Image 1 (cartoon, rainbow over the protein chains, first blue to last red):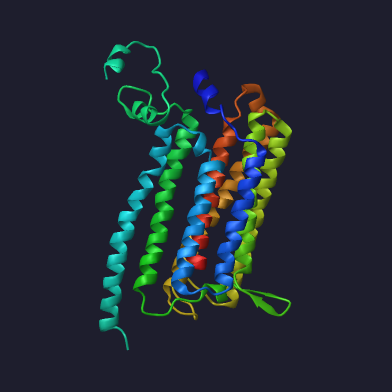
Image 2 (image 1 turned 90 degrees about the vertical axis):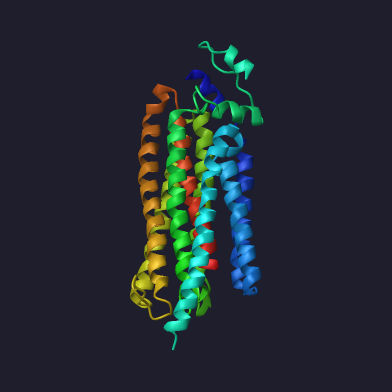
Length: 109
Length: 231
């Protein structure tokens, strides 16, 4: 147990790192906001918002949630399972397309 | 493998790093993660919570893709009037800023906890909880405006597709509940830090574990911000 304790806080980045990450998060949020504010074209807007969102998520998970300093075994146990959600995403977007088609066929005025 | 069979005694496995470490950690007959149990438990909870929020967002996607009625324009719905001019999504931008800043103060609190600085850790956690409280307050304002002024209900609204209200109240409501619980959790841990409970046990890891929960709440907000408000 002592060994575990000792190893789990071997590395802690200096406070300056957190400030830099905070500034980056702020800049990326502002960028996503301005993408909406200046009414960028639909597809480009969705692409940019997704990219900025994923970058922010990466920064939080890497630095704020300390995954950069955890053992690789734990990192993969955390990051791989949520990828299963992509299956649900694929199935439900196909299903939603079908539902929309049926609704347009039978319920649209 | 021969190496492992040779080490069947009680001596701990050598701690490899990188890919060899990943394989050794996942191999049988061993302690799975060389991390304290509290942290692993919190991570397991957060992974399961990821599935809950992931499923919510995907069901929202499905509802939005399959409706024939037009989806309300979120930039207009969540606009605020500042000096007569309508600024789109202003309240949401402020809420995002508040939550990101609270995540920053929490990360610094964790850093001070490992330096065993009792007072600064407690104060920073208190500031984080106050930011969280103001986030919940702003969200209450947003809900009030939407329910009373715009007439949005979970079963319908005058702005367009009725699924808008359903998705909005379910997703932001569940997230707001997480923030509220987080504020309570942080306040309790901050109070205990201040009283010196972890000074006596010499183990400040609870601050890092509470921090993981708080950063997760921020993480979920990023996806709600991107996919519900901006999409």
